[in-house]
Image 1 (tube, helix red, strand yellow):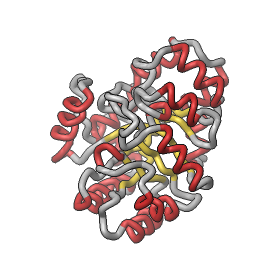
Image 2 (cartoon, helix red, strand yellow):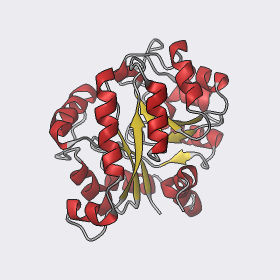
Image 3 (spheres, helix red, strand yellow):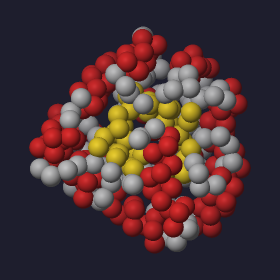
Image 4 (cartoon, helix red, strand yellow):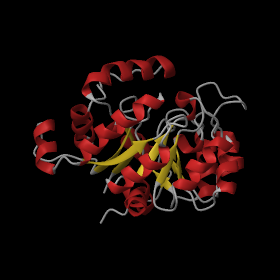
Length: 278
């Protein structure tokens, strides 16, 4: 089983603008990957992915409800409808995560609504949403996640600096204050902050996804982090549409850093367990 734990997709009317923003911000081209649901289904399926975690993030408070309404609608699509949309006989199945925003006025009720809809987790992005990961104003929200909702947070930035809104050190503070919080730290715990991932997060009780990591990290440092953290809480992630699932899977295999059983765990079995996929 292969599960892509980090896939962004957008409603058709905003997908082109959203992809252009990501390309401009990170300086990485999406190479004609469009970022809409049809394209995500096609790309993930042809890569051999069985499930992918579909992520949205409201960059403004007023985007919370429209974004969550869209992913709830996607969740209601059956296998036949997804196949018709993609034009393929079978498709990878989306696992839906919702979004909140620290300045949205009714996050608590929105979390309850998402729970009622069967949403498994929430994606946050401190840089794009304008808050510090360890800001105390976020603490009521972290508490509200309880032990059922998964928190997937972006960590790191293209220009690493200690004052960055999300850093491994800031995430460590959150983990200390909320030890029951189920956390997935994107980009191996800190995009371009991987030395800090090693010292501050590796070995702690959280998951790392590997999105936007394998192309950029020093292989020696990667092995150090994996040796300290173990493979049981590593998750494959492509960062579609900026990343290509097929290329990322190939890169993961070619690095030859896992045994066959470890590769199977990282590629999908760890995520299957975390997401409680039967």
